[in-house]
Length: 424
Image (cartoon, rainbow, N blue to C red; front, side, top):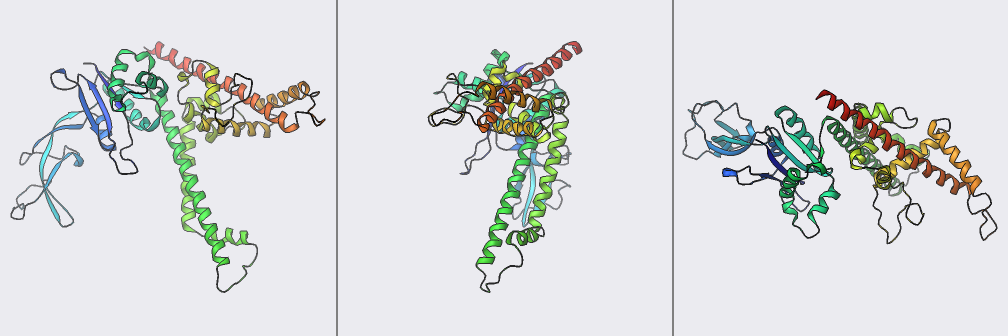
């Protein structure tokens, strides 16, 4: 039987300690066809739901039954009473934690979760990536499907005055009635989610290493200036700091973690077809830079035209002809991560003049220099310095790159869709 499920994923606890469980709404999933509402308080509950083993009801345990078939976290324990004799209990019915003793009282009687025919609706991106990947992977085994909708589309559905606590119900209704607005989560999407996760972990490891270096440097400088002996360090301060930091175990461990995270990121990126077909042939683009594009764009189906992708990257032109940048009183509605990735990519093009895109950059420099050669400012000098020309040419090249990326990514997507139709 087909069921329609809406999931509003939330971080389980706020910084203030307020509980924020993931909300699940199943149309007609309860008794007598009533709607079923579930709150998942932790990640274990989410994983249980994805695998169809979320405990929906408990029963009293039967003495002597095999309880090893149930995962330990699904068993219900109670404290042993002071006058209670537990010596005759079979193995698995008694446990001890510190000074406290517990006896098994309840075991699962019914389960809820993903099952055959289920259609799940979620919001694209955000904290729900992991759950969406787990549901999609499990759904392939049981015959369920997972769909996600861009947040801006969902916000239009919800409106500004609607209650966010009804998001799960609205998602269930929309995935039933307007599935064409959703994107199905497939193996390709799970690979992109793994890239996004690996990039996030790599960035966190990098930030931790930098913070440790800054603490060590500040501590070392302070120890010199605040020393009561007033000794002048041998050699330059920076060289002495480098010598000491090389022997710091905390910093060394963080550097090892960063290397491990970078290796994981490289492996995740190179496992995608997008890397082989699009990014790998580009001179100057490595796994780290490719990951920034993959993690930010996520799904090229979100962008029907190259103009929409350019606007999302911040590589478009404003209606008045100006190039977009952060200005007071104006909305900067592009992705800052993508904009930064483009900036780094432009630097790579500039450093590789013999590459395909490096040659395009040189060509645009020549065009802009010829076009603006005779424009003189009020001070009698050219209005366009070499720096102006370089920036204009760089962003024109990057704009063309975004157009090319949109075309190549869509070509890969259409090839995948054609292969699926042929396989069906």
